[in-house]
Image (tube, rainbow, N blue to C red):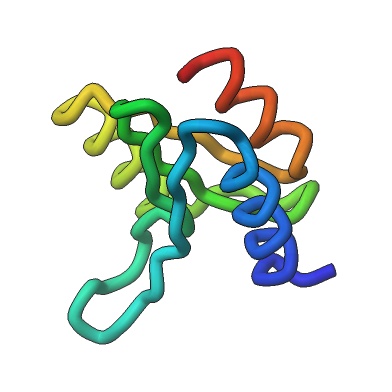
Length: 94
C-alpha cells in the first residue's frame, strides 16, 4: 500500500465518524513542503495529521510544522500509520 492509499482509507474512515470533517492537503508550489497531509475538525475542534507508512518517520520540517501548529493554535496534531490509530485518536483525544 502507498502512503496516498493509506491517506485515502484514513479519510474515508474518519469522515464516517459523527461530527468529523476532514480533507487531504494538496501540496502545490505555493504551499511549500512539510504541511500535514490531513486537516479537519471534530465537533468544532481543529486537528492536523501526517500520514506515514509503518516504519517511516517524519522529516525535520514536518516535525517543526506540526509542533508550530500545536503551539500556536492549540489544535491537536497526530501522526497516523493505520486507520485504527486515526479512529482511536479522534475518539480519545477530540
